[in-house]
Length: 492
Image 1 (cartoon, rainbow, N blue to C red):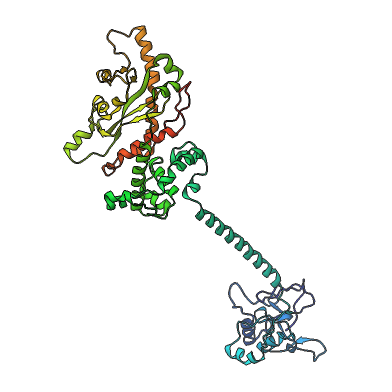
Image 2 (cartoon, helix red, strand yellow):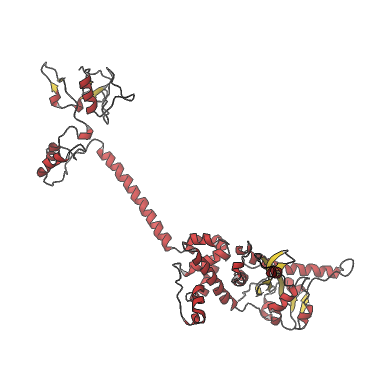
């Protein structure tokens, strides 16, 4: 077997030796005898295929894969013995036997680990010679240090990534849902309708002491009248109190569906429903206890200049509004909740605001068939008026006689009795329209609570009055209405 020419490469896997880079090595062609050639192919772990074809003059094995015993120098020149087979490879630690590898652990050679080809019998034979010493002085295989360094860098990067993820999970677990979702004032306005975090926190601090002992709706139903005599902690679910209030705000202010809230807060759908019902009744009790009806002196001190110029004696501006409700199956109920004005089934309520824009009166919700006059009478607002007060309303409120019984008067746009308005009536109509528009803006603000975007189901009939009143009163905590010359005021 002749030595190869100067330009040749070793065909053993994982061996990159070439005559150009390692001129001191000899390169040997595969034997021409078929039996010996198959032994070489099997030894180097290759299979003849389209991807590996043995060609005369271009397929070689370098001398590094042969032992000294494979060579002879009988003719004075070192040549490969006939029948020699390559046996030194990377996968068998360059030809060392299992016993030699054990000896290498004692410093006689450099062999780091046992070959994967070692049999259990071989390992049993050499086991008594193992003394347990570590191979501190073992020389690593070529490229092993680079591979180990790259692996270490990869593992260090993975550790840093996992540490970051663990830290984020810990932070996320420690934060409440309110802190996670309300990172800015814009988020707070979207989810809660409060203008800023400062206002939200002020409101929360005011209700937190009493909220910590509130009784959940389901417990109150079971306990009945005795529930008020026992102190229950707010422990119906694992949510913190502020997250329960935030969940209520998400449902009412942002209009998020209960199923979505159950997924976000990771609680059951029934728990979401109980929390909303509980907080609706709790806030109705807390906000309903605030004295929102403003005194005559407070109205005068906060009255905008426009009102002072045209209607200085006005105490309240009233108007009715309606919200759509589900059509009941009963024909009798349909006739009661059907509104001829909206041409659909509705609930109807009356809202009153002070000239400064604050909501000072909220009636209960009635069926949509009730008239404005009857609603005003049943709402109880007439009992709050004093002699000398004026009530501003739309033309549809023909309640002048009812107000006269209280010593108050009604301010409405004048009715057209001639072919056209007189100059005085036209100016009065324009002035009243500009001022009365405030109550329309206040109603629009209430309806911007997105729970009213869809038709109210009849299943909410037990809490719809509480929810409506809460939205009306919580609108007072928003930014002031756009009234030129207004003075800041507080409804409470």
